[in-house]
Length: 241
Image 1: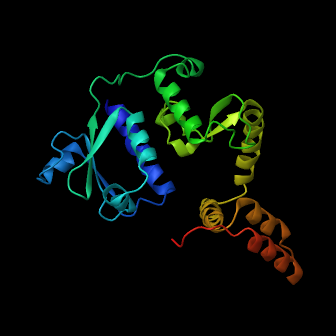
Image 2: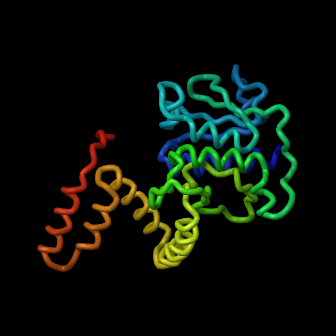
Image 3: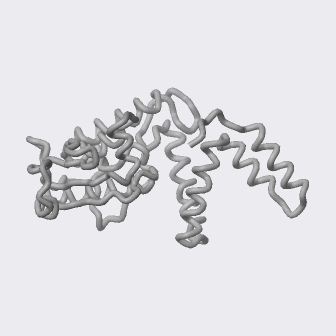
């Protein structure tokens, strides 16, 4: 159970960062929390204080919590609000916390993976998220954590997956290798800037318009104006943040 709890903490922290929800959210172990003498979460194994996090708004005032809910469940825990600003993570009675045994292929037969794969395909509307075809789909991990963390195939947030037909699954694996090779040319700060910049641009403009804009850039003013025209044509209907 303690190993699952450590992986949950790591996965949840990374998910909060990726989703721009972390703010100044802070984790407390059960021992640290009880030392505060607070009123709630007496049985919780881990507590997250969220008063300075956008997660506070999501959990208290409405928002899509499906990915958060699933991530917690994936590690064998359930959560509850104590104060409006605290989330306690509790042991799921009857959950098997023993390390999963066997090969990777055997783990893909585990009911926990089968459940996760169904959710990925349901969220995709049972269509390939790369080509749109309604063929038999795979749930594809877009990344894996370092082996030292020991994450099981089902212990990833839903946003880490894409539902892909077999053809796109095979092709995407090769493209992702080339993308990782490209990242070798970037510093950590540059990678964070690219991620944040594209995420921001894709909110306001269609991804294909952003790509066309970048491809059109060149040394002359006409290149810039051509790129801007691609952006104008690809404006989304997104609401101001």
